[in-house]
Length: 357
Image (cartoon, rainbow, N blue to C red; front, side, top):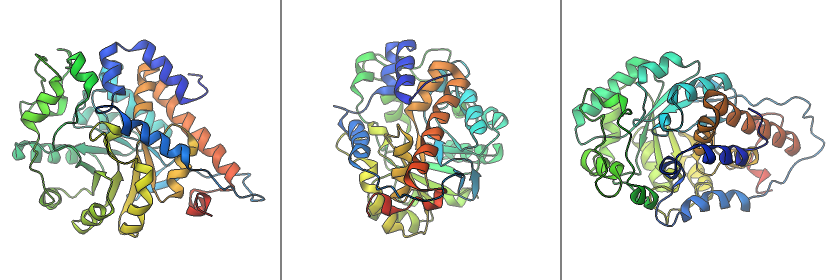
């Protein structure tokens, strides 16, 4: 696919998707201010570029949790890829592999984890929600480890689902031909039809555990050998607690603005979290990544890598695997250009003095 930027890809996706599906992917919580705040934070940061640096050759490769990746942009965990395209998560993971980067599979995937890892040519991580049924959660953890996933990403910012008014208005639910494929064995694969409001909100309220505490991190580490990343942290003290409880990584995230609408922009809190963690764990960021310059700003403020969310779904809706590949290629090309213009021939050269000289 030939697109100039992710904004063009967004327009193509919006034209192709049914209103309820578009709203599910695009919506934030309440007035959707947090979602806008994520993007606005990148607008406020400028890059104090270096000159007369040899940038004839640029290297975008890095690693996450010791796993080499070709660029510091991974695919964030997102539910229900098959609402966008029949190939769903298979198309997305194949595109991520072709780009040489990491793919994070959602608990709420429309494709079984074994099928996703079989199609993958790059590292696959698994994003986990903890169900009230702890035995079902444990069985899922053991299953994804056996399938070859390389890390667990525990989402910690959804004790209850944020109120997404577009979904309430549309009475969002999954169509009958789609399921939450990794939960069949537990009996949690089907979402009831919406009788009023969001069926997803009803599913979460009934099945996910709102009483989760820090003890869950130790429990999770006791049942798996996989490294654990905590996703959904916006406070420095919580980041320190996460590391103290054995987290190998922190994903600074406000769930794409879909949970607490008054939450801070992830880029704004990133430096404090990086400083507080002080190298004891890797720190990543999602929320609002739309340009290669956004990537370089996040890396300059201390992120090891960033994860793209909605742009991946736009690509999937626009063109399946080719569309996801196009979204990742736009970010790769733009990051490569930004590194050249900032005097950064390598990822290691992207340091905080670019944004705070």
